[in-house]
Image 1: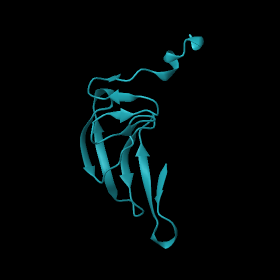
Image 2 (image 1 turned 45 degrees about the vertical axis):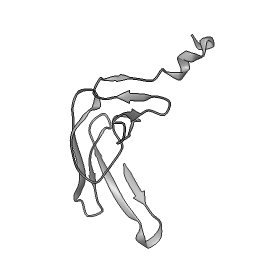
Image 3 (image 1 turned 30 degrees about the vertical axis):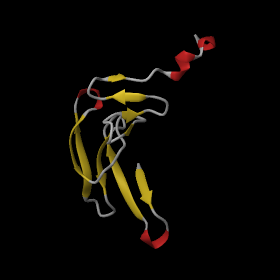
Image 4 (image 1 turned 90 degrees about the vertical axis):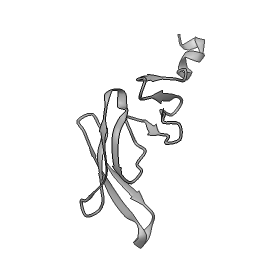
Length: 97
């Protein structure tokens, strides 16, 4: 997976190194240097991060630095507790049950 920032001459490309289930482990710059890395603990909590800020976490999750929660499109996940703190929106609509 690659990340493109900017357009034209000033653009940069970074490459994600993912594990076997697609979780980002490292981010490499165009020259192959590690610019971000992390160590994950149980339930997706990041124990240590090095380098630039990179918000992608477990599949489909986007880390919110301010709250420490991970956003999953319609609800928030707490990686320290290992559970969602928001209700699944599909369960709100009873016609789907």
